[in-house]
Image (cartoon, rainbow, N blue to C red; front, top):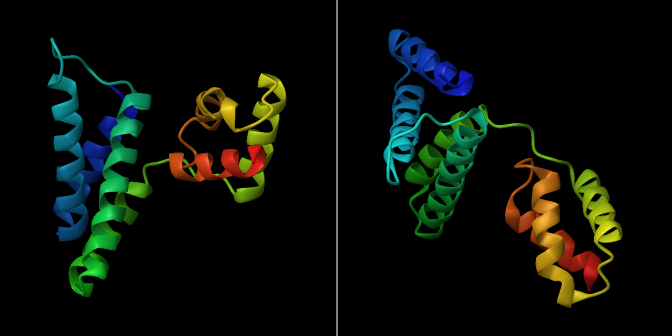
Length: 150
């Protein structure tokens, strides 16, 4: 079994024992998403840690978007709840790259691919996403690639 999935289950048990409602609800939601991903497709399979991290990133993004939507609608209490859930999920993800580190990685990818302008955006994005490996959101990577190519 994937170590990250096992850690999520152990932390869920600990949160339930300590009666931490926020963490319990959030980890149940994440584990449900992981289970749904495992049975998606033609046959059930066990997810690797990398695949579990991908599910976690997707869930964290959902929480950020929901928090923004609630805040925009003037529902501060729900927005705060979504942000708190996002923080719980983020604790299981690798640390995000600083802007300077991201800029360096993108510059290296541009040099390696020989990109010369915006027509090479797709090629650079593909290579940059691989180099970043989930340590930065796609929107941040895309913005940096556009800034350096433009």
